[in-house]
Image 1 (cartoon, one colour):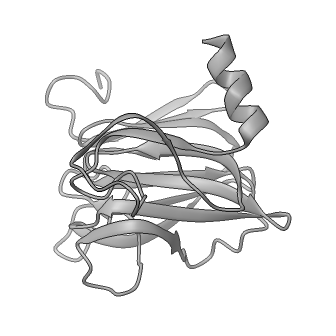
Image 2: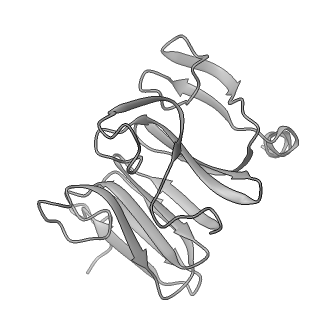
Image 3: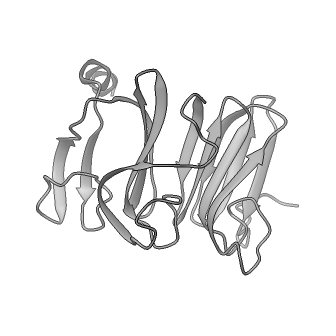
Length: 193
């Protein structure tokens, strides 16, 4: 395990493998349905962090001192955010995600992907959520207009340490040790309230 971490730091690249049918690996060079061993994503950007959802992936890179977001794979519920072209349900190549309000000067603290929703937390105490929201997993009330939520910006009173998205729920851990949850809790996954 230690060797893998050192290699990723030396080469400064993301390596991907697994099911490639939805485009979630972000490489146009993968020509089969499965990438059996690690394949390097080729670009000139410095990797920061990554999260894989169900058939899609969100990457955070650093470029000229700014953090930039990229995504690929399924986008049936806008889980990659408001990307262009708007109605593209499968994004087969690594594509820059333009998130309104996220200017690149912010520092991503945590990124997490669920079944069809994504969250990003910044050190500037902002939370961004987008995607499927039928159970409130994007942290906003469920209405007809928020079921496939393009973008939610949630100012937060405390710095977020980590976000974890499950199938249809989200858990937020703050630096102060508080835990917040939202989404489907039918099996107790959002806590016992």
